[in-house]
Length: 110
Image (cartoon, rainbow, N blue to C red):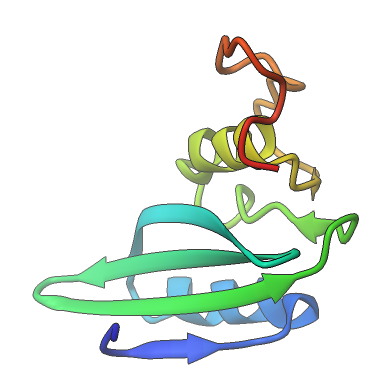
């Protein structure tokens, strides 16, 4: 089990990201996994030797907001999640529109 894990609703995501940014954390990774029919998206942040994790669970077809206006480096993770899982992320800076990865199967983990 992850330490410092906070589960939130996807509609709270941007406010939580702003709070974490103001607290001086930087983004370390964003990853997704499919659990049954739903998706879990995990955001990990670090500051010195402290780590925080924020998790959202969404159903297929639910759009989530991009966090790239808060954490610029998130665009790579968000494009990856979109390309591999088909999760719709609105407002990504540097959106590759499904072309970041070349895969033999479109959205292989959807």
